Image 1 (cartoon, rainbow, N blue to C red):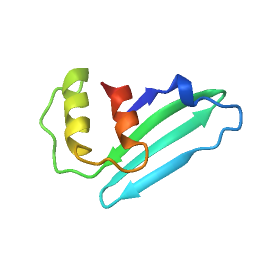
Image 2: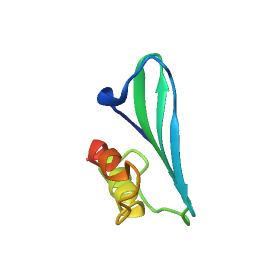
Image 3: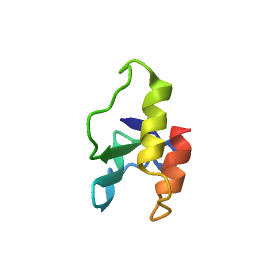
Image 4: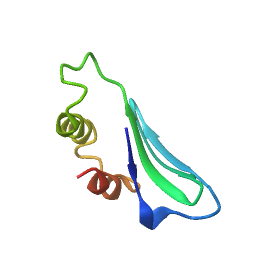
Length: 79
């Protein structure tokens, strides 16, 4: 899942990653655009894959309580 981050867009295309066990958050840049990218390990998820609100809840729950790096700002982009 990724989310646009207009304020982070730059021409240099440098991407940054932050990871901790079972989780990764990133700011990926491409063509003067920036995106928040989230990956996390989980068991099977029971949700409708077309339900964007459910996907956001799952993501917010997976990263809840992590105030490191830019994770709070990236989660704000999700909200």
